[in-house]
Amino acid sequence: MRSHLQLRTDQPHIILRDLQRSDAAAWYAYLQLPQTIEHTSWNLRDLQDLLPQFDLFASSEAGSQIRLAIIDERDGRLLGTIGFHTISVPNRSAELSYDLDPAYWGQGIAASAARALLTWAYSEMGWVRIQATVLPSNLASIRVLEKLGFEREGLLRSFRQVRGVAGDFLMYSRLTQDA
Image 1: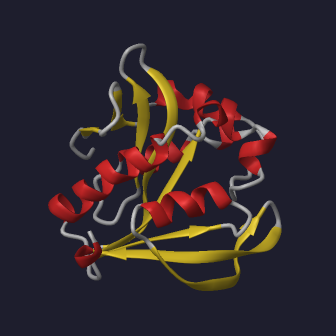
Image 2 (image 1 turned 135 degrees about the vertical axis):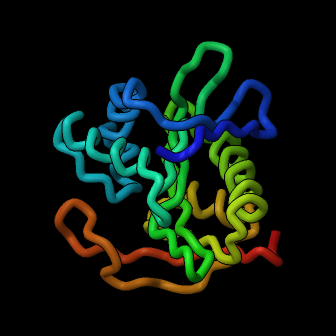
Image 3 (image 1 turned 45 degrees about the vertical axis):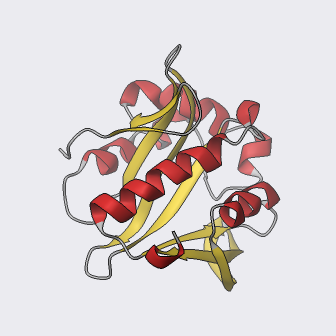
């Protein structure tokens, strides 16, 4: 089990904390909404499909995925999740990913959460490259990445399966010196 992580964002009352199994129902509730699915590669049939992810997030193995809950600390409500996958310890790099309940889109929460997590990743993990892939249709996420100083590197053709179909993704990155 990795150590517990809790980070403050620059938005009042919004914190990042370890994602817990008790968050699963709220997480699944917005991940299955059509407006969320449209811009992600999630392919969940039911809540049970999401549960194995929690074992991955709890691992203390080097290079294990990291996923945190974005929480309104006033009432403990899950607003979204954010974290890293495709972590390469030797290359000191990882891929950022996040999702947000559509009820909270357009409020700067994703950017604020990402800023806090990126600061932690560069200072505590010593990573030199953080990348992010995004579907070209996800204009809001593209704006978030560009606002955070990520640079577009190119188009990855048929990069990931999106509900059974090979999807193109844009690749963005941010290096330590860009911070």
